[in-house]
Picture (cartoon, helix red, strand yellow):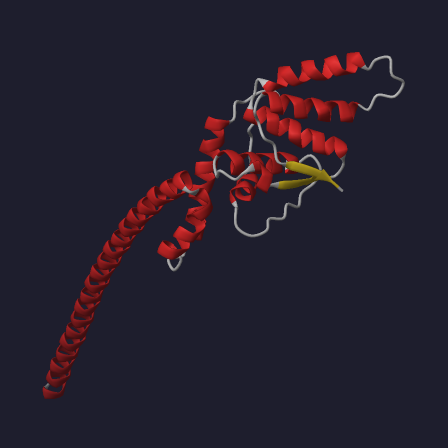
Length: 239
């Protein structure tokens, strides 16, 4: 009938309209997926370019740091702030500084039973800071004395700070002797046998005395040994 024919035509038309709408939606989805893929490629390319630029910047920073640390360590921080202060590279600067310090101690300290260079990152940071005040807080036996000794050694030998311009404080006379002895061994590793011989000779010469101040004997021996070896040590005072 005419009514049935109209319904059939309407149904077919409706179906075609739905299919066309689905096809259109699918085309839009494909286009959006393509656009998103293109944007992702652009973003990836941008990230790669930025990473390359950052790596190039880090290589330049590392090169600069090596030159600053080698030529005039005490002014390295100022040079860094002038050239890179606004680039958020403080962490990388400190990592490069640790790397330099670790390499420096490997070259300039001969490992012996007395001098074992096993410095943690925190110790290297404390040694490497030459501007402002540094406070070390840690448990007993964690390496505070070693850090202070290595810091003084580094300042004198690499940064060319005069020993007479450094004043160190020790808890007591025994600690003062320990610091001076360690510094002497760092500057002249062979001084260990010389000092032990000198201390033994002095103690033997005083063996008949009733009360022998061993700390005073060793302090005197350190003074004589450093003088004989032409090594100037910094002042080490006690509380």
